[in-house]
Length: 60
Image (cartoon, rainbow, N blue to C red; front, side):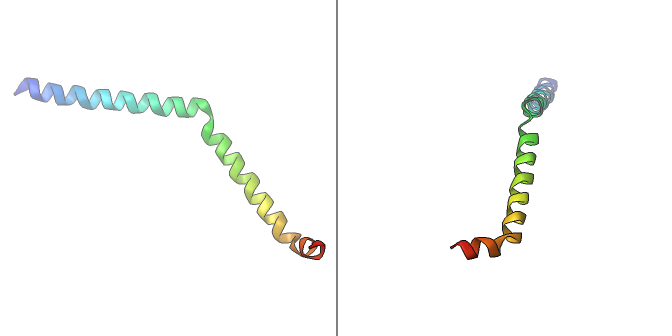
Protein backbone atom coordinates (compact mmCIF):
# COMPACT_ATOMS: atom_id res chain seq x y z
CA UNK A 1 0.00 0.00 0.00
CA UNK A 2 2.80 2.43 0.85
CA UNK A 3 4.56 1.72 -2.44
CA UNK A 4 1.41 2.59 -4.40
CA UNK A 5 0.90 5.89 -2.60
CA UNK A 6 4.60 6.74 -2.97
CA UNK A 7 4.40 5.98 -6.68
CA UNK A 8 1.39 8.25 -7.12
CA UNK A 9 3.10 11.08 -5.20
CA UNK A 10 6.25 10.71 -7.30
CA UNK A 11 4.17 10.68 -10.51
CA UNK A 12 2.38 13.90 -9.47
CA UNK A 13 5.68 15.52 -8.46
CA UNK A 14 7.30 14.65 -11.79
CA UNK A 15 4.27 16.01 -13.63
CA UNK A 16 4.51 19.30 -11.72
CA UNK A 17 8.24 19.57 -12.48
CA UNK A 18 7.54 18.95 -16.17
CA UNK A 19 4.84 21.65 -16.17
CA UNK A 20 7.25 24.07 -14.48
CA UNK A 21 9.96 23.39 -17.06
CA UNK A 22 7.54 23.95 -19.95
CA UNK A 23 6.25 27.20 -18.40
CA UNK A 24 9.79 28.49 -17.87
CA UNK A 25 10.71 27.64 -21.48
CA UNK A 26 7.70 29.54 -22.81
CA UNK A 27 8.42 32.54 -20.60
CA UNK A 28 12.09 32.55 -21.59
CA UNK A 29 11.26 32.46 -25.29
CA UNK A 30 9.22 35.66 -24.88
CA UNK A 31 6.72 34.28 -27.35
CA UNK A 32 3.81 35.68 -25.36
CA UNK A 33 5.36 39.16 -25.34
CA UNK A 34 5.85 39.02 -29.10
CA UNK A 35 2.29 37.81 -29.59
CA UNK A 36 0.92 40.64 -27.42
CA UNK A 37 2.90 43.15 -29.46
CA UNK A 38 1.58 41.67 -32.71
CA UNK A 39 -2.02 41.82 -31.46
CA UNK A 40 -1.52 45.47 -30.49
CA UNK A 41 -0.17 46.29 -33.97
CA UNK A 42 -3.11 44.55 -35.64
CA UNK A 43 -5.57 46.54 -33.53
CA UNK A 44 -3.83 49.78 -34.48
CA UNK A 45 -3.98 48.84 -38.16
CA UNK A 46 -7.68 48.00 -37.95
CA UNK A 47 -8.37 51.32 -36.25
CA UNK A 48 -6.41 53.19 -38.91
CA UNK A 49 -8.25 51.38 -41.70
CA UNK A 50 -11.63 52.25 -40.16
CA UNK A 51 -10.63 55.90 -39.81
CA UNK A 52 -9.34 56.12 -43.40
CA UNK A 53 -11.96 53.96 -45.06
CA UNK A 54 -13.36 56.91 -47.02
CA UNK A 55 -9.91 57.50 -48.54
CA UNK A 56 -9.63 53.88 -49.57
CA UNK A 57 -13.14 53.94 -51.09
CA UNK A 58 -12.34 57.08 -53.15
CA UNK A 59 -9.20 55.49 -54.60
CA UNK A 60 -11.10 52.40 -55.68
